[in-house]
Image (cartoon, rainbow, N blue to C red):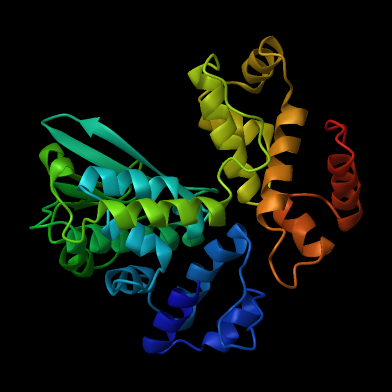
Length: 328
């Protein structure tokens, strides 16, 4: 958030106007307070509009320098290999954003794809967010890996811009496609084993332990059992991600699992649980992770957790404190 605003200033944006439109209040130390996922997505759109530059987010991502994204940068740079760095990148992405997730998958011809799935419908906000995420991710990985990281291709869901020159320059290839099904980077699979320049296993272990405390991974959620099927583990991950994005929609989670809502509900019932109890547990875990945020009152927490109002959130909190299951 802070990196985005400071970079926007360097490009000439009126950051105060952008922050007002995005409903972001500056803190006393000059930084900006955390914002909900949906507001962060809109922030990229507002920056591009203020600058009159539809590629502003791409420029900002390409200008990334080590340390500007804090702990997450060092989690990547201390990884042993590029493949390890991608795993760490995805696991601790909530340190930076809840607006997207990454999927690494093998492709034909000995390649691998890194797909950025931005939450929400395709629009100017998600297009700008994808520009930043892909350019910043490539910048961080290519600077961190020992040697070059040539891309076989890059694709975007957005419409083709008037000129693709900046995209080609940013990613080091003219194989940039638009109006494609996904926002993704593609490179030879052999580079997954490439070592990282700053690899430090001991420091990496310390940083990951700290990151788990910050993110609150698994906090407040029922313990995973060895007997739990993979679909349920995926379901839990998607439910936590939906709650972190400021909501908790059964239809959204089902869609991300490629299931119908009826099939998902049946599987949950057969597994001895319900959607309502699962999303309640995810909200409780998220609330505990946000408990130490300074200045976050019931109204802000309710909005962040997807409740309709502060009263509903407070009733849920009382229920959690007394140990009763979800009945809201």
